[in-house]
Length: 436
Ligand SMILES: NC(=O)c1ccc[n+]([C@@H]2O[C@H](COP(=O)([O-])OP(=O)(O)OC[C@H]3O[C@@H](n4cnc5c(N)ncnc54)[C@H](O)[C@@H]3O)[C@@H](O)[C@H]2O)c1
Image (tube, rainbow, N blue to C red; front, side):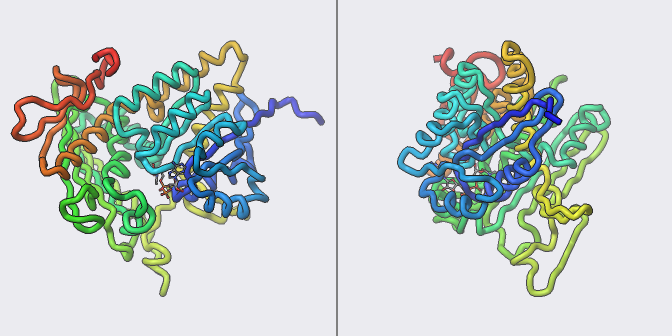
């Protein structure tokens, strides 16, 4: 019987083929190749990996060999001009999973070519870059979004539900910690670790969680850190970072959040990463531990090095399903599927003349739209600037948001005037361009 369900295909280009590709994008593409997306609005939609841009192409070629039977013969684009080549392939969507200081150029090129874009966290490192991408996406009428998969963690969804429903009232302060193993700084990122810090890499998960869950307005950023393991004790590369954000809420009350991160945890730590949060409210306390969710498994001779003792089965676990199927699932993969659904809805979810209405609706989704990433990018921008000052011998600077001198200003101890990092407003309508 002929099908009456509309069939469509999204062709995806992947920029950067590292750890996060292996953990989340590969299982997403494999799952969607077996079972395409379906929604009553857009019908059946295939999401195909059409091309990969990677610096040398070595990993991409390995993946093509390994995944040819499930994902087909995707194109491989290598330096020089890997992104230019990828954009000449017939792709509709570009996913960017390069190191965080290389997101902006790839995203700008992809949006300029009229592609929908998904960027791994943190989206970009400065507010000016964010302004440019948001304006370009608006101009080209495409989606520009960022992956913060912790917002889809069931525990964090529950936290937000309790806050939105008024069960937990007015957050007063919070503490979050995310400690990565030494292999991240010493092995995986060793090529581009110089000048980088673990705060931008992982505190950003909790910056977004705090911003998205509790609302309010970021007012100030303070930050400190330690050096001497990954790089020299007086160099620009950080082992660990302690970030403090001050938020203001309606009614004139403030809250403070401390986020501690590192990437020098010993390899024999019982879990892949240490992740815990505590938030205190007027009428309650939320304590969450994403590593110790209840399972401990010891296997002689294998844990905790080859396998970990405390397992996060919620992020991207591999399973034998009760019905016999092998699967890899979790919120790290769901977040990619959700984005693909948003693009499919824009492109195939109704009449062509109503595309702009659908696009506007998807851009209203504040959990992942770049236009809603201002506070998070402001915090990252401030953290990067404070750490750079500290590395240059001027520690303990404080950043203030929407000061009369500028939207993001840095007070350096001893200076009479703040340094303006961003002239436009973080909250409000004045962009840096109109302020200068
Ligand atoms: N969602 C998450 O929780 C999560 C977890 C880990 C990493 N990330 C993010 O994903 C991004 C990548 O991290 P990763 O852990 O996969 O890093 P990785 O070092 O394992 O991989 C990065 C890849 O990008 C490639 N690359 C570098 N420069 C490139 C360029 N100019 N053009 C094309 N390819 C380039 C590298 O060759 C490498 O294959 C980062 O932004 C990181 O913050 C997100």
